Length: 194
Image (tube, rainbow, N blue to C red; front, side):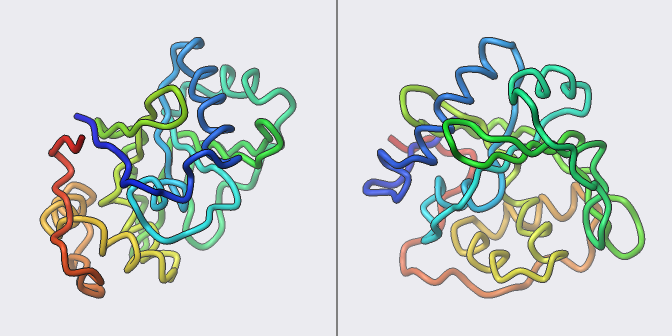
């Protein structure tokens, strides 16, 4: 399943897209899959954000490979009020800060909720394709963080995809944030856009 980025996207030809393309090629050569998350995912889906870094999620078993691919990364605290990840690395690629979260999980209503590290959704970036973390799940991540990015991301998605993510995660009640801000209907995540 793949999707094309909206035309004229902010990442076209920028340093974030270039760094993401470089790191995606490193991941592919190491046979590791990771999902783009955070503001970079929102930007790739057409959101009006200017990412300052790249956030990726991957399976927890990829720690040693990711350490090598990032060079000399810092290990970050995985707790806090929301996060319950297996591990979290912070490094730089082509001068751009990059956070890689292994075994992503959040705390919701007193219990751990494991996130899907890599969804089937792919988007073209630079000269390669990148996988995304599950966008519907990230609506709930941002909601748990108390971030207005929950509404921004939700406006880009089909409400059925958000509801399905909430059901998979066992989060109730379902997300009922702001309705989409544009007049065109959001794209279903299982569609291919060319």
